[in-house]
Amino acid sequence: MHIKVEKVRKSFLGRLVVEDISFEARAGYVLGILGIDGSGKTTILRMLVNIIAPDAGKITFDDKPFTSRVQNAIGYLSENRGMYQQCSLQDALVYFGRLKNLSHKKAAVEAVRLLDRFGLIDQMDTPVHQLPEEIQQQAQIMACIIHNPDVLVLDEPFLGFTPTNQSIIRKMIARFQEDGKTIIVGTRHMNEAEALCDDLVFLHQGRMILQGSTKRIRERFHQNIIVVEAKDNLQPLKDLPGVNRCIMENQMARLYINEKTPSRKIIDLIVKTVNISRIEVGRPGLEDIYLEMIQNGQRGD
Image (cartoon, rainbow, N blue to C red; front, side, top):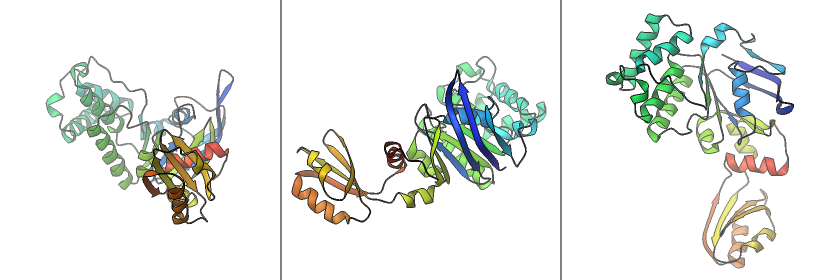
């Protein structure tokens, strides 16, 4: 399913939280919506699944507006997690299946199939509130996919999950992508997004500051970074020729190097300037790119 967001805007109590955002999510690809808390990513995801409506702009699904058919085609994992605590695990999953228009019989069959895949058949009659936290997390994942959705919308899918369940989510995303489904992931964790996402939308204070394929963005921001640790005062490194920016924390400095300046030349200058204990050359990750866009006040596509 192809999703198109066009100039979407949203305010709460007179405060603009999403400002004229446009992007597209393609079937068979993973789109990452990235930003720190307060950037507007959760608001956008809630508009995508029709929990809240935009004040302006439009969202279409295969060029059509949101309908009950679209509603039933979406699997949504909210940042605010929760399951009905008093019913059995199987009944909780059946309930979520029924919400997505599955018949009771179909929902029951799918619940058993998922419980078997997750190795939880022996827990199917256990009340949810008696399950360990890790299994309750797995139940939330199963509830998201019980109806085999065409679209996955995942808000902070790794937040609070155990390493085992984070691995389950990664495999689930990969499987849905192989099946040609549309996957949208909202997260503040740039490293996870870099590993998962084909396309990216960067948000800051409700505005889009950058979008494009992960590959294109990495190619655009290809300057080297030199990480230096030393017991000396690192302040002189800020003034070295060829250094565009320097971020210091305790006894470590991250130097962003002009792309036309050879790293070897900068390293020679560093060695002559401070008594280093460690030096390392790397390329900027998504977090570096995001911080650079914010600090430079840039917008780009």
